Image (cartoon, rainbow, N blue to C red):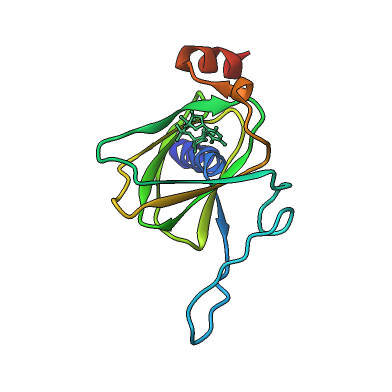
Length: 147
Ligand code: T46
């Protein structure tokens, strides 16, 4: 009984850390198409889109959190791993589908690794680029989320 309750709480917490969005492919005989729209398929106003490609083998990117930025990440081609950490729980997920996006909230530490050679990681962001929104020091991140 106690174990069941602990398991349930654990599942709820883990579920909150990684929020998946499904993007239905609008395919026909010619192939597939996915449309992403702000405040529709993407749950915020889209201010910026960027993509990461040609990542060298063995490289880890990210290693930071954001104070207020929200993002949706997806692999248009290829795959990579994303480690998410909210200061209490760490979880690793795989991005490997152009029809499945990962919503990463503010104040979540992220590390991307194990990029396949063909990986194109598309990121849709809620804000313009602003270096002052980055928390690049893990100890500082832990202090902020605990306060
Ligand atoms: C994130 C993960 C998923 C810009 O000038 N404009 C931009 O919009 C971005 C994203 C980056 N830059 C510059 C800043 C650095 O000189 O591009 C260089 C590489 O950026 P960074 O080292 O931050 O890249 P990643 O892959 O570690 O992190 C990026 C995003 O910065 C970050 O917000 O969540 O992808």
